[in-house]
Image 1 (cartoon, protein in one colour):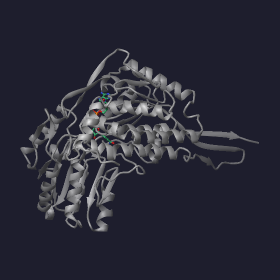
Image 2 (cartoon, protein in one colour; image 1 turned 180 degrees about the horizontal axis):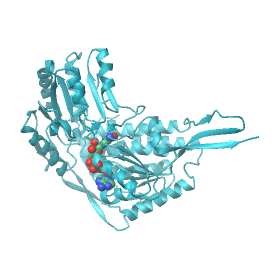
Image 3 (tube, helix red, strand yellow; image 1 turned 135 degrees about the vertical axis):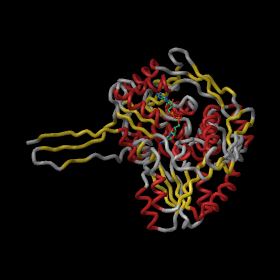
Image 4 (cartoon, helix red, strand yellow; image 1 turned 90 degrees about the horizontal axis):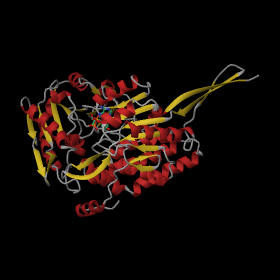
Length: 497
Ligand code: NAD
């Protein structure tokens, strides 16, 4: 992978075509109403494009195209080898267009372009390989029966999938849904977040170039209350996969109950805990990992371990490490590989995160960062912030901030740490650091979280499920388990003489 400089990325950005249409039935499309919304680059405050603003009529068009594509089996009915090849073509298409996709995400929502280029897009591409490779290995069951009957259980695509995704990892969140959905043979109507619609539109074009038939993946940019709600309430969408906030996740449950009772799979927010025991083998390494986990992507990460619970014996030393390490994550131009963090997604979101910091000042100690920064004409930047001696029941100890703010909470005993770790409404992920193998197993077993990482923070991969417990939702992305969201079990009986 070539190392692009700040100047290289700036030059590329100058000439980058900005996609701004919806993509329905294999074609670029305007919203029927002609409405658009302006996509703003948070790093500069400048407009990038006026993007088609889809509403219920456009969702109807997209869902109809998806239904037709599913009904005539133009995709699910193709030979498995052909479908696998198209999935591989998609993966290759993402890799070929990695710089463009990375740049679109960076310009659209402020992340460091180098992270999108080196991590997000390659990971997304790998998912089309992973699920493409899986599609001829998803066997059903032949059931043991009495003489005279034969029964099989097969896994069938559900039909039309509605996918509504957030802005923090635009390419990845789309790929996490699309790759298993189409590998299982479904058609999709995807709504990217209004703050980051661009790369999803480009993805749809790449899919078409890769040979995916028209109508299998449709993209409807627009707002949550209009396009998102229309998908949630659609009578001809069979299943809804959502990644986003817990509050909006609950709305999708309601939409389903008030419409066609579609399946609803939710991957929502978190307040993950990182437990540092005094017997940790390498405290500096644990601090590096804790800092990376909360400052990467400006802290706009669902599984960000934004609470560090530190055993009192090593508390002071750990916080000293954190303060030194935080210096390396100072924000800067997202196109500059030397920047520690990029821009926050919007001014409103920056205000929200800043509000958490200023309220926390009343009752805890801001020991690093804490200030808003203006760069290049935009004030959507925040310093990497460490708040020490946070009360576990306080606002900062309980609520998702979705920004570069690390709450440090000292503890004395293992029991206390486990109780505090499990004390929020969330259960997405948890990590723990210890050199005691018994403690590692004992504590991991008691943590209520979809993923527990031991002596590393927030581990994940294509092969393992990602998702949560409690108000973090219950859907699982990644791994072969994700396919359960996109397939239904069908039993077929055959009587014979
Ligand atoms: P959000 O819930 O505001 O929006 C997510 C999506 O829902 C967007 O496409 C939005 O347009 C749509 N939406 C908003 N209001 C809607 C409504 N009334 N009806 C229908 N759709 C609506 O979330 P966000 O701000 O985009 O993303 C941040 C949240 O996402 C955080 O809570 C974060 O933890 C969560 N997240 C979770 C995961 C995970 O895998 N668990 C991954 C990434 C982000």
